[in-house]
Image 1 (cartoon, rainbow, N blue to C red):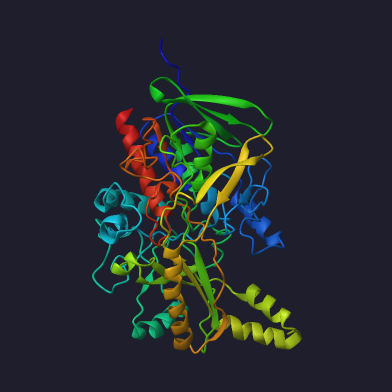
Image 2 (cartoon, rainbow, N blue to C red; image 1 turned 120 degrees about the vertical axis):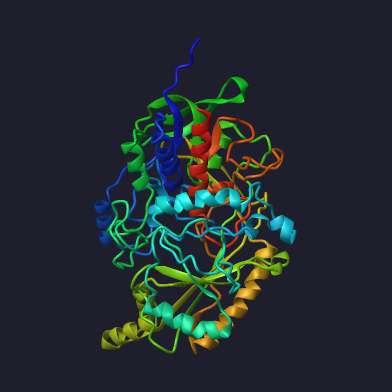
Length: 528
């Protein structure tokens, strides 16, 4: 009897990773169904929501938070049982969380992928940097990455690194006055300030206008110069993929030969739908992907699904320097200090990255001054003075995979009767040792800028970089997927999520996730 399929491939999740995989499959003539739990919202509506919101600091607020598609800031959706309040800024709508990312598009270093071999901690990747490099290039082209390919991104002041087969698709944005002044004062003190490669186009590209410096990347780019996953969801549709919104996947069905034969999804009205396909790609975020696997009882012979949760848990420094820097024009972040990105020190403590925010600081400054009782003309004068000199340092730390840090289905259920999320997360000694190094840098930064320190003990902060939850490895006993992102347990089930990343480094993982997703599509295209 001939098996009837609804599609060659079903992709679950329409964020940047899922939509890029769907597009790469559809443009090769594969029949693709792309499922999205949330709705499709136009950019103008998100902008209107932001303008009318009284909660400007909540970057999830302009986006829908539906009973069947919660954002992660909904306290009912995500409960914490560990020592740290783990709450990344996840969205559920067509395009996913890249609607409000800062669009940093770093590559991992070759050494990042050999952490265990070189430094005796954590895990190695099961693939080499050279294997991933062509896909990094394709991911950069897909996202329209603008960057400087002449710098040593390891932060060691050497030759251009990591290796590249081609230049960045677009030239870097011009260095802002603030960043010019930061470099001028930090470089003589031995700090290597590296320009950030960014998915914010510097000239018209793929139907997107050049960035005009709105400085509103989070919570939403008002003109669409910054990449967001909805762009490739549209590309996938134009290539022939079928996009189904308000479709929450709740079960992956196993069949003969331990293959996945169908996905079941539920609509807001309670209607259940079953879709059969040759291949399945789960691209439902680093928290939702393991949840779906766990409630489906699939891909978990290793007992590693949901475990090894890593974020670049960080700390922050706020200062008022001795000269006007005028942050707030251009990208919300343009570069960082990478001295502690790689080296033998990783045997003892985490890698460390410092980034200087270029976001408009007026709200934070005004709230602080009002609490001090400053009002009237003095308030206006102080806002201008402090905002011009504001230095906001965000620091991230390299996490190691720890099976005790994990996401599991909650006992609480959403409006569709599907379990929500429970997270247990603690910060380990490897990161705490890195924090001591960062604090010494903070003291030096304050001295370099003759600064008034406003806050240098922020406590641990979320950084929204979810990794490890469906961890990659060569041994099926200790990992969920292999180097192709194919699950060890089911040959036709692939996971397109940053949750596969086994070694976190200190760089934003989205570009790597897109590169891996394009590689997944290539693998499936060859096999169909």
